[in-house]
Length: 161
Length: 109
Image (cartoon, chains in turn yellow, orange):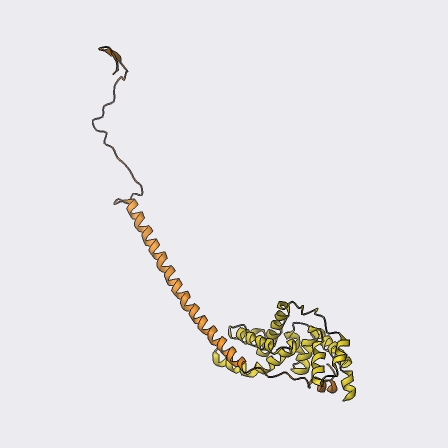
């Protein structure tokens, strides 16, 4: 990949990838690290056009780096424990944005990633299934369960609104 | 198809990611430039190492060839030989040991 093409790709995808990384990790420095490593991998020739589009590749790279981050920090991605709902309820008095952030953070990681890709990044389900390496039915199921949980946790805010 | 939930989406929309720090762009570009330089540097070092290896192999082969030629000698025979002239050698017809006594002392002839 030439530096010119790389710069164009970086300019186009930096913000969405950073947002995705941030919403997966809830940490600005970690999200920046993931974006940095993701683009470095792209520059070193990690992208194979035969295997899909550049956007899918980049989101999948961020997702895999986030999983690695979880593993390296001693947290299990698939089975990490969500925050207890009672703790969430006490926090719901905070600002709405904080409450939403906590609610999303409380999701199991596999639900969290598909929810972020679907609700925030507005990616099509087929592309999400490639990014998270799961079949379409599993993706739909995770989104359904994530939304159910969020509706329950954020119910007080919905009533106020 | 997943049904829309505009109310939930509106709530989710209240949580926005903070912008990345200004240093991210510089950091990525610096890494890319460094990676590029490193990559070029490795190519140069690789070519140099290959050239040195080739010269070493050729020098060893040449030296080996010279040694083989020295061992083979001018006629090209690949062995060392020692020759002794046996001209004038006459073997004893009947070898025998004679013990004799001379002037009070024993002697062996």
